[in-house]
Image (cartoon, rainbow, N blue to C red):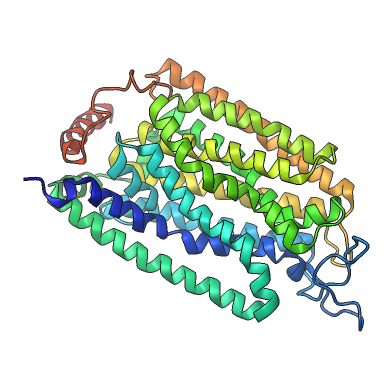
Amino acid sequence: MAVPAERVSYRFAVLLFNCLLTFGSYFCFDMPGVLQQQLQGNLTCPNGTHHNSTGHNGTLECVEGLGMTPAQYNLLYAIYAWTNAVVVILAGFLIDKLGNRFVQNRITAFWFKGKELALAFGLTLSFSRLGSVLNFFFTQQFEAKFGMQWTLWGGSLLCVLGLVSALTVSVLDKVGMKQLGLDGIIQQESKKVRIQDIQHLPLHYWLLVLTIMFFYNGVFPFVADASKFIQDKYPGYSQQAAAYIAGAVYDSSLVLSAAVGILIDYVGLRGVFAVGCATLTLPVFALLAFTFVPPLVSTIWLGITYSFAAASMWPSIPLVVPQATLGTAMGLATSVQMVGVGLSNLVVGHILGTKSSELKIPLWRWQQMMIFMLANTVACIIASIGLNVVDKKQDGTLNRTRKGAPLGQDRDPADAAQLLEDETRTEGSVS
C-alpha cells in the first residue's frame, strides 16, 4: 500500500502551500510601482492644486507625496534587490548544509523533477504573479480611501501569510521525505556540501544564470517605472489606468504560466525557448522607445515572453546541477539576478534624473531608459546562444525533447534514492 507521500494529492498539497509562500511578498514588491506618484509627489502642494490623477486636459496636476526623485525611487528597488542578493546565496548554501528544507524552488524541483516540472514552476509563478496582479488592480484604490500607512500595513499582513505557508510546506516536505525514506540520504549528501563546490558548477549553469539575469534586468526595472512612463508619454491616462496597463505584464503571466509550463514539459527544448523569448522581447522596448503604439500592446507582449522565459529558464537549473547542491545553485542564481536588477535600477534612476521638481520626466529620458532595456535584452540573447552551444557540446540536456528524455526522467519521488546515489558516485569521481 502506497504511503501518503507517494500519492499525487500529497505533492500537490506541497505545491499549494509552496505557491502561497510568495503571494504576499510579490504583492508588496510591486506596491511602489502603483504608488509611484505618491512616492515622487511634492512634499506640499499649493492650495487648490492637489490631485491624484490626470486633469481634465490630460496633464498631471500637483500630487502630494514624499518628494522622492526618480533616482531615489529606483534606489528603493536596488536596495531590495541587493539585500535579497546577499540573503539568498547564504540561505541557499545553509539550506543545502542543513538538509535542503526551506527553499521554494528546491521543494518544487524535488517533488516534481521528471513529473510536470515546468507545470509546477509555472503554477508557483502564477500564484506569485496573482499577488502582483491584485496589487495593480486594488492598491491605488485602497490607498486613496485609507491612506499610505494602512496600505503598507495591509501588505505586511500578506507577508505574514507567506510565513505561515513557509512553515507549513517545510513540515510537509520533511514528513514526506521521511515517508519515502529519502531524508537520511539527503541529509548525508547535504553534509558534503562545501562553499568550494560553487567552482564545480558547470559552464552551462553559469550561462543560464547570465541569461536569467539579463532578461530580468529588462523586466523588473521597466515594471517599476511603467506606470509613471505611461502617464508621461501617452496622454489621457489616469494613475489607476496606467497601473492597469503596467500590470498587464503580470496579467499575461498569470493566465499563461501554467499552460506554458505544460507545453515546455511536453516538448522540452528549454534552451531554444530561452533564445526565442529573449529575441521576441526586442520589439517590446523598441515600440516603447520609438513609437506611440498603445502601451497595452507592449505590456501584454512582454508578459507573454516573460511567461515563456520563466517557465524555460528557472526549471532548467535542476537539470544541470547535482541535487545536493540545488539550494546553493538556486540561491546563487537568484543572487546574481538580483545584483543585476539592482544595478539596472540604479542606472534607470540616473537616466530618469535626480530632480523631484519635474512634474513630467522628459520624453528623451524615457527613450534612453528603453534603449538601456534593449541593451540588456541583446546581452540576454548572446548569453542564451552561448548556453545552447555549450549544452550541445556536452550532453544536450536542456534541448532534449520528451521522447529523447534521459533514463530516469519520469521517475516517482520514491525512486529518487537510487538517483541520488548515482549522483554521489558521479560527484566522487569528478572531485
